Each structure stands twice: as C-alpha cells, then as structure tokens.
Length: 232
Image (cartoon, rainbow, N blue to C red; front, side, top):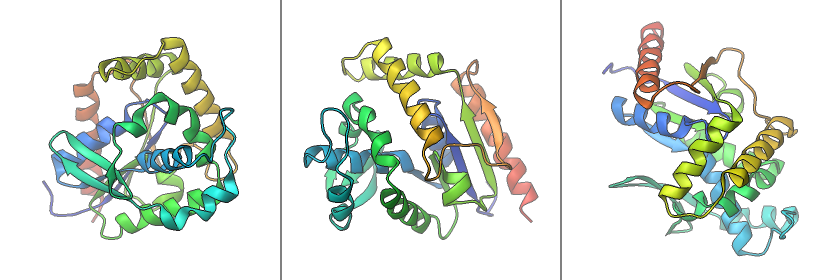
C-alpha cells in the first residue's frame, strides 16, 4: 500500500453496510477504523441505564448533557473485531440491540451531544490514516476528507440485512419491527436540525442494494487507490 495517508469518510443510512465496508477497508490498508455510530449508541445506553429516556422515547436532555463529563468512550481491538468501551466496560453487544436502536436517533439530535462527539471524533483523526463511518462524517466531522463515500440501499433491503444480523446474534425481533425502526431513523436523521444526514457535494454515491460484499469491497479499494493517486 502507499505510504501516503488520507482521511476517509463513509456516510450513509442505517443498516446500509457502511460499517462493515469501512472496517474491511481499514484492515486492508492498515488504517484506524472508528465507528461514530457506536459512540452515539454508547451515550444512548448510558442514558437508558440512568433512566434518562422514557418508555415513550422521550429523552431528558438536560440530565444527559449534564452527564457528558462522566461519559468516556474508547475502542479496543479484539479477536472478533473492534469493540466499543463505555466507562471501562465492553458494551459492544449491548449497543447493537434493538432497544438501543429504537432510542439512538432521539439522542443523536441533541446539539450538545453532537458537538461533544464530533470534537472527540475529530481528535481521533488528527494524524489522518483513518476510516470513519457515520451520518455526518463527510459534511461535519471531516469536511476536508480526501475520500468521501455515501452509501445507500432501499429501506426494505436494509431492514432484511439488519433483521438477519439480529437473528444470527440471537436477538429476537421481527422484520416488521426492524423495518419500522429503519424508516423512523431515516426520517429523524434526514430532518434533524443539527448535522442532518445528507450526501456531501463531493462524496461518491454507492447504492449497494444489489452488490455482494466482495463487489463493494473491490469497488471501495479502487476508489481508495484513485484518491491516493490524486493526493499529491
């Protein structure tokens, strides 16, 4: 691989496969991978554990914002991949559960939460050589990233993928529940006032609805090679 390092921002809709492809690319080119969505999920888990979110998904914003100094998030590379660490606890499996998914968008719209996590995300990428995926990486976190990808697929395709993943992990859910969650999150992500989900003007669109994992990985490494060649 080239000895040049760049910043790679991969944005897209929930369950579009952006995290899997970002992880695979980072591993192949020797970059650090950061899952920004996991950070919002970790804050959501903290809020749920501390009774800051009601059964109706109403967030106690003031209490959660006041708790930010007590929320420490990091990542640890394990045999089965990167795990999210919340205040010293490995919460990787917990933050992927449907109850967290049902609340994370309500937490992610809070401006103070976004500001704090964006600052943390930017600190991870100071020296470049990073692949980060999320909703606003190419537009807000790293607007000057040398390679920006925006990933999408139909809501039905994404729901089927997510449902299959949950079943394989032994988590009970129905396809209808997952589809409803996907559609709701799309709406919240697209319409929030703070850093809404949108394709950066200079991002490359990838619709992977009908692509295999091998095909999208090949596509992505080709785009990386182009970006490296253009980064003189």
